[in-house]
Amino acid sequence: MSTTTIDKLLESHQDLFLQSISHPLTNELCEGSLADFKLFTYLNQDLKFFQIGLNLFGKTLAYCDDSKSAIILGKQIGFISTDENDYFTRTLKELEQNDLTNVLNLKNNKTLILPKVQQYIDYLQYLTFESNSYVEIITFMYTMEKVYLGWAEYNVAQKTIPSNLPYKYQEWINLHYGPDFSKWVQFLQNEVERVVKTKEDFIICEKSFVKSLELEIDFFQACYDYHENRNVLFEFQ
Image (cartoon, rainbow, N blue to C red; front, side, top):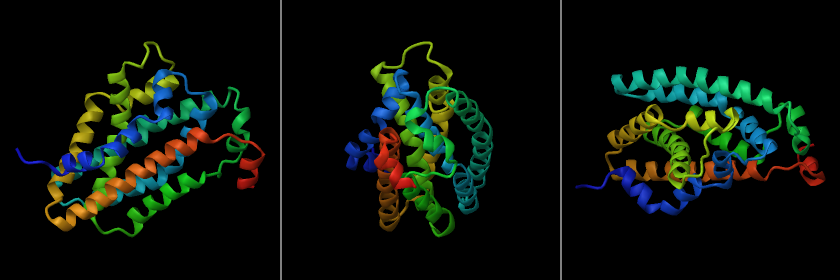
């Protein structure tokens, strides 16, 4: 049986991938122990990707050369515009009623973007407005979603997710675990396999895969570490 492109990537970069799916932020989220101010920071900053993420979805759809695949991509745009957006609205509103003393500046300054998050946004802007490679773009899309499915599957396998988790934790897990999300990630994997045909394609694909994993890890770490003391506040003033 021949080794697939994704098999090669996961084997070559297994340590980096494991790091991306076993971060303390997502582990604690699944355990229900992630502090409110850390969950708020994570969701607040994740929402900064929303508009550019929609733009990138549109770019991906525009560059897709297969009609059946294009239909699936179009349907997913509708999903993230409703289900995920509803979760953000409800959960952030709930968290804002809790003790966010450690992140008051983040709560009150709607435009504050952490440096590592800005680096991630810069990459999304590059993919959206500069890249002309469907291989590069679809590899990013796959990697991003694979990480989210990965941390959910990792914690399910570790049996760390308790029953009766509060909505703020459980719904985020639900959105990234189960048959529907697994089917979506498998579709993206199939797209990568479909379009990576040459050695040059694989080089582009691998570069995008590694870059995306590194950005996800940095994003998780930046949100997990963010705590407003005088030094942090000075950095963003």
